[in-house]
Image (cartoon, rainbow, N blue to C red; front, side):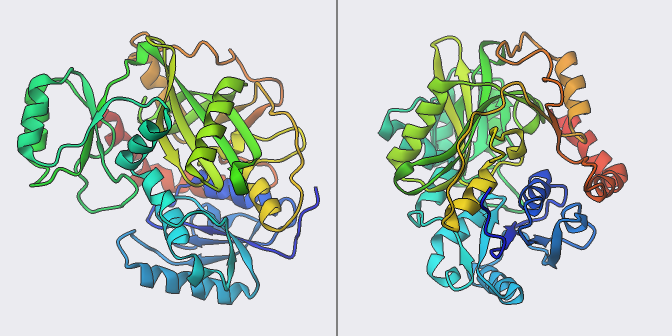
Length: 407
C-alpha cells in the first residue's frame, strides 16, 4: 500500500467519552502502516493515549459546549505542535461539523475533505436527515417535529403507538437533553407526561416505531471522494447493540448487500457528501424497504469491522485519498465479525432475556476462522485493553448497570 508516511493523522474528538474504541482503531489502523498518529484525549490514561502507535496525546478535555472559536484555537495549537499538515479524523458529529464549517481557518494546518460547509450539520440532524430523505426519495421512518406542547397534544390524539422519541439535534451535547437517547413511548399518557418537561419548544423528533421482530439492522461504511466517487464501501448486519436495539454496535458481521450498497452510494452522491460515512439502516420486513435511521458524517466506532482484501478500511482510504495516493480496490471480507468486549456480554444477556422475536437471518451463525476483530484487545498493542478494563471496573460498571435499568 503506497502510504505517505510523511503526513500524520490527528484523531479529533469533542466531549468526554474516554472509552472510545473507534479512536483506538484509527490509531492502530494508520499507525501499523507507519503513519505518525496524534490524538486529542481527556487525560493521559485513556485507552487511546496508551496505544503504542500514538506519538503524542494532546490532553484537552472538552464538553461540546465550547464556542467554535475556542475549539478552533485548540486545534490550531495541536497543528502547530505537530508542525506539518495532518489528516483530521473526527470521531463525533461535533468535530465533523466544526471542521466542515471552518475549513478556511483549519486549512493552514490540516487536510480534510472539501465538503459543502453546512451539509454535515444537516445530515447529523434528525430533522435535516428526514427532510433530505424525503427530497431524494429515500425511505425513512415516519416522523413528526412538534413546535409546542399543544402540537404534541394534537399529535398524541392521532398517533399510532408505540413510537420513539429522539433529540432533534442529537449531535449537540447538552447538560440536560430532552430525552436520554432513543426512548420508546407506549401510549398518549406517557407521551404527554414526558412532553411536560420539554419546555416551550420541544427539541425532539417523534418517530415511527419499527417493530424489532419485523426488522433487521444494517450498517454501511464508506469513504467517498469528489463527485460521490466511492473509494471504499462496505455493508454488514448489526446483531447486538448497547443499549439493546438503540445504542452503539456491540456485535456485527460483514455481510454483502449490493442493493443496499448501491442505495447508500446514490444517496451520498445526490446530497453531495464527501468523506467518511457511517450509515444505520433498518430493513422493514412489512414493506420490504430499507429505512435510513442515521447518517453519521464521520467514521463509525465499529469501522474496523470492515476491511477489503487489499487491506483498506475507510480510515486508510481517507488518508490515501487526501494525500493523493491511489486507493487499492478489493472485495470485502464477508463473514468477518466485530465484538466490543466491554459491552457485548451485557448486550448478549439482554437479547436473550427480552428477544421478543428479533432475528437477524442474514448474519452468519459464526465468524469465519480468524475473522473476529476485537475492539480493544490486540497482541501488538495490549495497553488500551488494560486501561479500558481499569476504567470500566467501578464507575464504568455502575454506568453500564444504569443503562441496563433504564432499558
